[in-house]
Length: 212
Image (cartoon, rainbow, N blue to C red; front, side, top):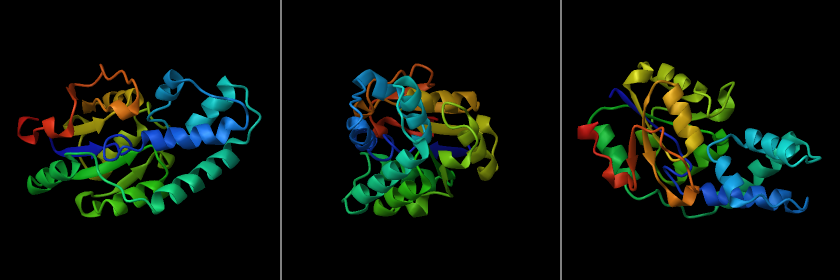
């Protein structure tokens, strides 16, 4: 292992319920209420991808661009004033990686402004070489673009990278990039099929970098 790449939502912070709540609020006035299984299938996608899917699957008469802008504003407003906590085990894992001189990065489908708000709020900036948003690559997860871009910026081969993911879409992206994937079975991320992952953990504290 020469690098360790983190997804953010559902891995560093339990934010998937908040994402879903904002999506549901935005389309509630259209009398659309996606079921839990459908929402679970959106986990790990960029917000533009999510609203494109909703527009197509529910035949919605909406502007995806305008809706994404509304979503982004609500997301930042709701999180900027919140006292946030990292998922148990994340600060300790980052510290161990830092002490082992293993470079790390965040590769998240969320907008960059939101990523920065979360990482700043949690005081984790000093652990990461950079933050990468799905909006910066041509194809979002489950395509491998974001992880291939992260490996290039870290100047390591994809095969030398470990990825921590909580969603089926994210784990698929990591494996398509040729990386080793640790699947975190976070119950707050819904029912995710992580069978594609190389390793499955129920808690972050189960990750032992000395055995990777």
